[in-house]
Image 1 (tube, rainbow, N blue to C red):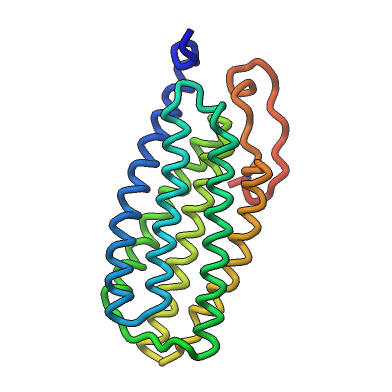
Image 2 (image 1 turned 60 degrees about the vertical axis):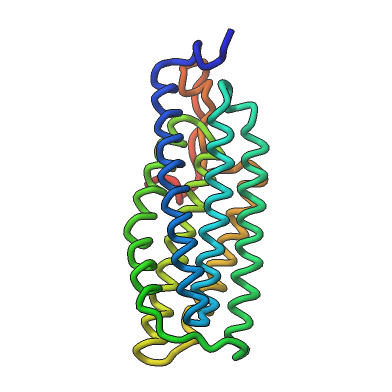
Length: 227
């Protein structure tokens, strides 16, 4: 019998929500990547180019979750989706670190970019909501991959804040190094989240068996997931 046909109604609703938020995330990140890469090339801004590449990583992560939940039994694809998300985190951390070090070494001298400031500000408004919604739904559904993808989206929020601060400080005060320092901090965070995704420790996501009442869920001990 088809696994989706036997799933509780609440589970089906949550799976549908995951597919919707993933579709929105992918659409937004494709637009964001195109704008950031074009603006970054025009302004010779490594930060903007890196932000555009991060958006592409976001698309890969969201696509992995979309692929998982396109199956009648998403749990079977959970491990593979988590591996893709983890590798995306690691790739993001490596690129951001190299780019930040290059900027701090004086190899890059970004120019003012009004378009970059606008896209960073918009991302700072959009991404926190998408991350919160997918994280909440993924935790209720018991999907580690959905929660991991929500963390990827949250990192995009941090990158947006770092990019916006860097572009503004560079435009107003000429401090080209500011976003590089913030980027290194984000790279460390991305590495940690990549390790958790690889292990499957996605913020205390309860198994579906707990959601359906087959057994009680274990208590969550992750302080970052209590909100």
